Structures are given as C-alpha cells and as structure tokens.
Image (cartoon, rainbow, N blue to C red; front, top):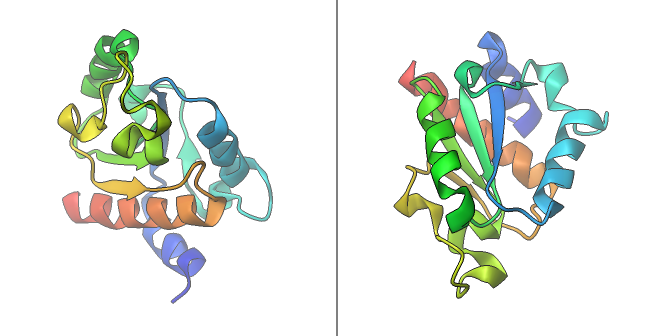
Length: 145
C-alpha cells in the first residue's frame, strides 16, 4: 500500500496539525508549507488540516532546536493541546539540536521536555519524508482514540 493510500485510509476523521516553531531557521517550515500547499504533495486533499489554535490540534509538529528563550512558551502551548495527541519532531534540530547542539541557548533534544512519538530526520526533511512521518503519526493517533 502506498503512503498516499495509507494516509487516505487513516485520515477519515480529519486530524488537525499544529506546528510549534521552537527556534527554526525556517528550512523545515518551508518544507511543511510545501506539503500543505503544493498540489504534488497537498496533504489537505486527504483531509489533514493545519489549524491555528493548539486547542484544536490532534498532532503537533515541532521544528527547530528548542531554545531556552522559547522553552516556557512551547511547554505552555504543548499543555494546551488536548489528549490524545501525537508529537512529531520535524528535522534534525529538534531530534538532536543539529548544528546548534553545543550552543548555550539550546535545550536539545526535545524528547527531554516533550514525549516524541515520531522523528523525521533531515535538514530540512523532504516532503515525502514529512508525509511518511505524518502517516506514522496518524497510525499512532488512531490507536490512541
């Protein structure tokens, strides 16, 4: 079964995605926008929607290295997301800190602060990798319902 067919089957309830930018260089953000807007990868046609409020989210996507400056706000936003929620670390920065991992201002990896269910490595990860990661997150989310 292809990734798109799997996503179509899993997206019957229209999960909503919310993105937390924890200090990203915007490389991952551009790739996330590509998966949402460009017709070749458009995940919204499969029923997956980006939402503007964490209170409506089912899956949270975290991009960028978690900085000390953003840690409190990110923790507060993460707490607002209702259960069952699935956390996806997008890019190498939230997974390990990336090129910033030795920095005094980076609190990496993020799994020290948030339970991470799916890691999508890459700097930045390509849209097919993001779609595959969202498909894995959807499977986890369906099991938690």
